[in-house]
Amino acid sequence: MANPTNELTIRRQMKNKDTSANKVAIVTGSATGIGYETAVHLAKNAFHTYATMRNLQKANGITEMAKTENLPLSLIQLDVTDDISVTKAIDTVINESGRIDVLVNNAGYGLVGSVEDMSIEEMKAQYETNIFGVFRVTKAVLPHMRKQHGGSIVNISSIAGRIALPLYSAYVSTKFAVEGLSESMAYELEPFGIKVAIIEPGAIKTNFRREQAAKGPSEDSPYSSMMQSPSKAIEKMLKHRLYPEEVAKTVIQAIENPKPKLRYIVGKDAEELIELRRKSSDKEFFHMVGQNILKKEEQEFPFRQNRDQVAAQERFRINIVDGERTAI
Image (cartoon, rainbow, N blue to C red; front, side, top):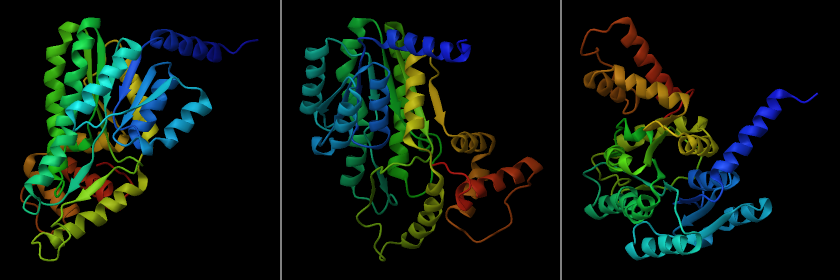
């Protein structure tokens, strides 16, 4: 006798494939990590997927995967910081496939350092990739989605788009910008049948590119000692990261939902940390960051604490310092 559960699973898979048939997806920053897994998952769900990256020499892994599993996946060079590169890539997709149904803006990196230690060139480069890259590719895709009367735009943000941490001011500010841009676009694009979703992962096991501000590591920097404290805390956080497949699965969930949520948090720890921030006043959260990230000397709490606040501070300490839970 057939297993009803297995039959239901098969029917759902067939329905998903029928829904995805002939649909076209673009993923930026697909060489590794979240972009790689998202491109592969889309292709496995029958989307004709264009995995894009700035340097095609880094495409060996995804190329082998596509060949081995016979996936509907194509590779295109696309540098999100270059207008000509973006235009050329989008034109290639339209000429080959005639449509674009899904855009996943994933390309990005993190600049680490204090505001004072950063150069204006470093800050501009961070924004050029993380926010103007999203703007540039989205702007190129939107006319085609409007003509189709539909599409999905998924922007990979971060828990850092909801919670600010010291010495990540450049990266955090770009992710806050992605959140605002995405939310505003959701209003603008809804009349045209275009859906917008924001994905907010916590700590993920990827080789995500982090760059230190050129002046940051210098002993001459007034922030050099501060740079050491969070780096140790962050190292502990990163020991228990989620795999990028979890983010990719969430992207698929957002795309296939006819009425997606605006925001998808990935990771229980990210959910807990965002909830902790929501329940804490600015002063409370500021104090917790100082005590647990910057390792300020213990001092009396600057306000009266109730039982919930004491418990919240302890959860924050576990999340950030002990590494038993992770979220950034």
